[in-house]
Amino acid sequence: MKFRCPKCSAACGLFDRACQRCGFLLTARSVLRLYLVQARQATALECPRCRKGAVPIGAKVCPACGEIPTFRDLVEATVGPPRRRVRNYCDNAPPHAKRLAQWIYLLLSATLLWWLLGYVQQVTGGHWLGLAALSMLYLTASARRGGCPGAGSSPSHTTRRAW
Image (cartoon, rainbow, N blue to C red; front, side, top):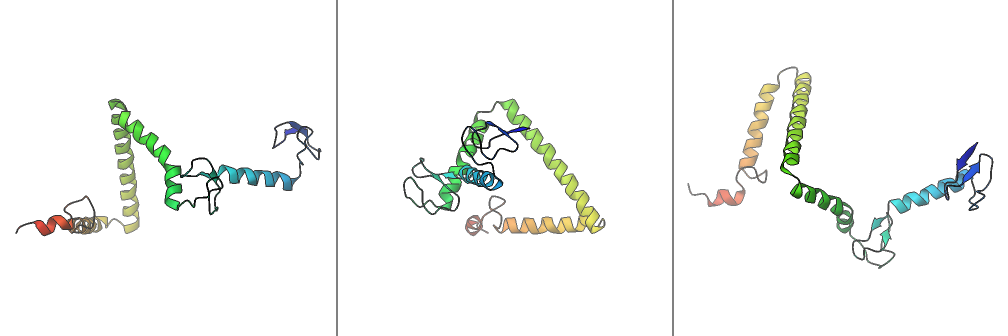
């Protein structure tokens, strides 16, 4: 029976001690060490300052430029490119694709609401309508007082209102 060497992908026998092509030891310890090194290299983040070096997880400085990357910089370097691709797609998507996304969002939201109402009814024993009305009252009051940004008036608008 043959299997592939984890380092060079050459065919190796089941009872071989080392790969015949690259000389890699085929012990459990060496294979696990190789996979650990590969996992660390795969989880390294690109340095947001120099864009040359890969900063391993847990490293204090970039090995290429010596800068100390902040957590915010690392998150932006990791999340920024996919975020820009999605925004670019959304900005340049044809109208029918946007309409399809709106319908999918509407259906998923309605399904989630339906499931949530069923769950609340099951947990509360059918007395959920009064709790829902009280929750709406709390949400409305906190939004009117400025506790929810963008929903209702903010504190700066309420102070300028003439009574």
